[in-house]
Amino acid sequence: MCRKIFIAGTHQHSGKSTVSIALMHLARMKYERVGYVKPIGPKVETIKGQVVDMDAVLMARLFNLGEEFDLMSPLAFHRDFTRDFLNGKMSREEIHQKVRHARDELEKRYDFLVIEGAGHGGVGSVIGLNNAQAATLFDAPVMIVTSGGIGSAIDAVQLNVALYRQEQARMKMVLINRLLPDKREMALSCLRNAFSAHDIAVFGGFDYSPILANPTMAHVSALVRIELNGDPDSGRRIIHHIHLGAASSQKVIDELQESTLLIVTSSRDELIVTLASLYHIPAYRQKIAGLIISGHSPVSRVSQQILDGSRIPYIRFPETTSNVFTTLKEDVSKISSVDEEKIAWIKEHAERHIDFAAIDELL
Image (cartoon, rainbow, N blue to C red; front, side, top):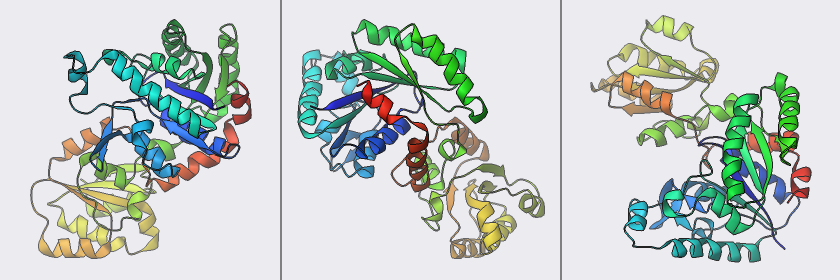
């Protein structure tokens, strides 16, 4: 018999994918066959001509699950998916049948199944299958993932619990993410008291970590859809600081911190050359995560040669510096299969902080 858990969220970017990776890792330490499914897939990419949810692709690559994306991502929202449904090109029953088929096949193949929701409980309502209804279709105990904070966590969870229980889903657990280490036990104690009257167990998730919160140069490259130049392995380092290279070259260098991304306009040849030259020195290499070179003016030929020769990771962003800042500020870093440092951190800290045995007992 397949054991199942539905990973829900109170909102987008609550940490569902991180928790799903953690539970996949922990389940594989106990169960021989562990699978994954994302019933509702609003963020997609194309793999060999097939539109697939991005999280399903991530899990397939991380855990060598093959490419059975018809099962792992039964409802991937291609560009006209919602419009086609509302215009009657597919019925609610057809959508539910796709999910039921994936459920039946996956339950035959796996001993433990992680089912990841998309956003809050109501996501998917427009096509007649929201997360709460998907949890009911899978008949899977629900774990709601939310961020740390006592009052805000209670409010967000209760809002979602109402919908899951309305749809007769088995609302069992809450996992609190991004806890402050010095307040972890106090926060969990208060939240357990708050949810005990609702017969909901509370588990601690991950403490807040800049390793998970901050991007890499590879992520920024994917975000702006511009090629990453330089050493691709160095492009996987976590960026801990972002500086604007607007001051004098000496001041910019003096203010470098560990793993700094520098945003430099293309007209600053002297600064570009200085940074590229310093990148050969190990002490400065630790401080320079990479460059974003913004602006419409070309970099001079000599400066370009020095830049390319240094192998420093850089992105040539042909827009204004303000557009670069806006893009980075609005971004929430998502984990990708090349984020080796983040994935290793998740697995290590999952073993430390997530009580998988207690979670498993409630399934």
